[in-house]
Image (cartoon, rainbow, N blue to C red; front, side, top):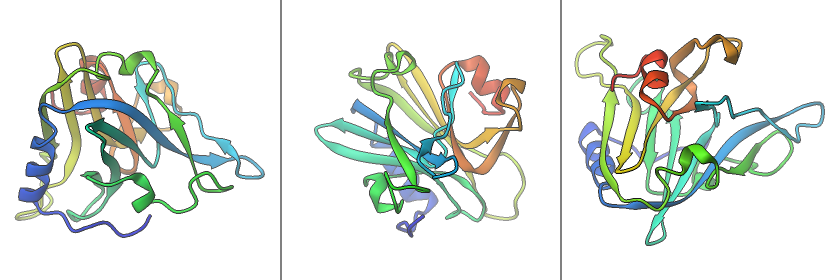
Length: 188
């Protein structure tokens, strides 16, 4: 990943709060490319949750782009949101061994979010003790009148069908329902 601008707790909270009232128009996932030649997009759709390993890009009305990716600005891996395209953070998009850009805009789980104003958005900070003044953003939750989504730094723990998750990893996890979010360890 390329270097990202330095976030503070205050600037991150302002950035996320600024999503309120906005409308998501498109969603792109960035997944690793695997296989012998590094050209096969990794699996990402696991039913009620998705694992776009490197991050997601949200294009908002009126054409503003946000990227949600994992990073360690706050000391450990957490979910970080930036007002910038994913190309500012990833190298080799679309190239063997890099990341594949996958459109998720038309995926049925995004239907309650796409083209509906965001009514609430907040950061889920880790409640684990990492030392004084260390806050780790585990996820960002967005809610509209017709849907909700948690975008988190995390991944499945081993076999994705196990239903076990790890938070605070160098991966991105997207959950669409409260049960999955709670099972993943996210506060709701």
